[in-house]
Length: 368
Image 1 (tube, rainbow, N blue to C red):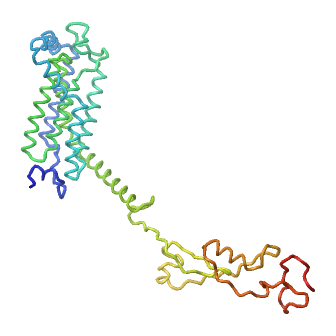
Image 2: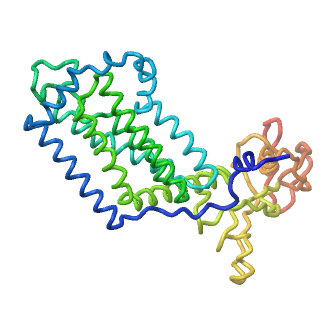
Image 3: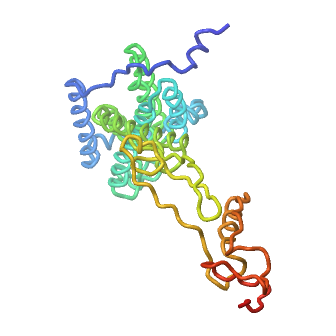
């Protein structure tokens, strides 16, 4: 007997009506406040203010030496902020949701958020070039523009975006609240873990939280682009399936007629008969459009095929040989006439008036 758990694994009969988040005034206000916080952290680090002094105090405190018993567990916990493993796990879940709900929006939203994350965080990292705590050269220095790539924290920003996308794509308000709390807890723990291990400054983690939150708040601006991408992908898939089903390069194009070969009756050509087939279409001979367009002028049938004098064999046999080789069926013989007599010429026999003298088979002289 099936239970509700296994019933949820089946595809829904129709795509559900998912409410897409809008860029409301409240969301715009949060985006503006987070952006100001982001810029304030960057300015404070560049100015080597009290925030840089706090970074050095936390670093010299060496949390991994104060609580060494947590080190083994936190080494595994920090993986929740690595882009590769987390992207695979979340993509698998969202892929199942896309299949079940008949929509590509979950996967496209995840791809858009990760693309924005790589561009924004990667550009700031390479542009500022801050060194990490383990590579610091001067106590009290901000270690900026020294060829590093740890400001802001990529683990922290990735944890905010990857786990926050689950809350963003939630279908009910209750699920959205629960998933928002879970993603906040995971991203907060990942950021503090990087400070505990000593791979990031505290200001790196603060900027990583702000960078991830900016991406999550800006996603509604990219919803029209995601919708257009989904429509285009589905249309390409539909046309590909139509071409695969019907066959041919032009199949699946709406409004284009598909040519059909219709066999016609046998028409006599020379001494034999040949079969003709034409593509049925408007205005073509032999198609059903002749009954609608009116009678057409009859085609002139070609006359009997002849061969030039001197060719091997009596005249009239070329048409039969062509018909036999083209169709594999022996054509009907025509009654032998004066020009195609099978009897050898005789000296005492005179040809009829108006008929050409018979050519001897053996190539001898023609009788007078």
